[in-house]
Image 1 (tube, one colour):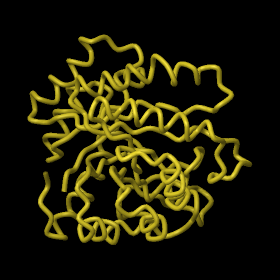
Image 2: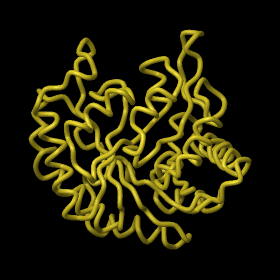
Image 3: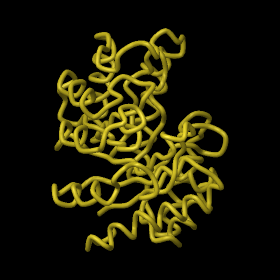
Image 4: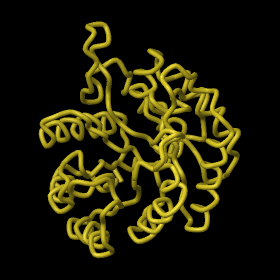
Length: 272
């Protein structure tokens, strides 16, 4: 199984992130933030090369990026930037890093709006993004997240059907799915099936206590051992990317790494 971690979950300094990921046995990094900004915002060509060089210095690579593209409401004036210069910059950064996957969000919705009733422009934006990404050889992975359209596995499957592009699939996050639906991973996972091209790994706990929080995989309500087995049995070939989301960053990311690697080893799965 290919295992990665979002670099800024360890440190916003790419050298420190790469050093610790390598020490923990994580072979890949996903770039999300570079120091104070979400990449590629504010980055120079030299900054992007620094990320690649930092990873390579510790025997790692950067096969995926999460630039936050379209994590924005349709009424926000900055939506034009996401459709224009920022989208091109994201694709060019992915190309420079050698990244094969770009995580994208299916636009933020009003809280009262259902997650499976998106306006046509959402499909148009995402279809166009996939078509642009195809020219770079990049796969677009749409994330399941509560504030966005396609928040559940089932609604994401419907959205992908409408986009209907071969290089556009799901970034499956079972914890996000659970936080939104309260459901076991299986329904959403089975609805998506082979359209899952990327996986984010974290766990969700404390719902019954009224204090929902993120915890290491295996410590919350998501059946991570079952999800790991399902991915292996179904021949999943994409990345499993640790998204720690709690603090202190280094200790928390170390704990998440140990938990996921332990589950994979218990399942007899080699780490790639």
